[in-house]
Image (tube, rainbow, N blue to C red; front, side):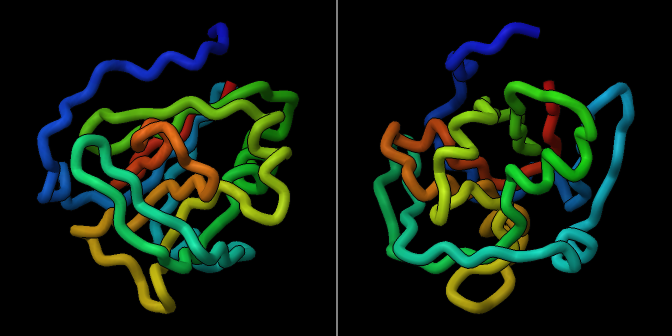
Length: 154
């Protein structure tokens, strides 16, 4: 699958309710499908990124917040087990973003994370439960993903 920066069209309507009750994260890489619970993700090494904002398309910006979770780059390296170029992070409501490996590496000490905590407390299901936070977000929410349900690594 070729890489491009295209993000599929998505609704700009508020999504105040989780798309499902299933919080399982599915990772698809190397012709394998792995499933993880938020509780398992919490056992992996965690990173905290402060002074982050939630940018919502058409709904404004909130923050700053301190988010804590698993570094997306480390998760991809751990489970892809081969050379990969980019990954798609997909929400339970089908919103998605595509991130290149080189961009994840370049983020340095402000990494993209699958956040499990906000300001020292666990994210609630309504807040995303597992939420992609990209600290350098500047494109009106094209990189933030609430209710992460799947990651496809290419």
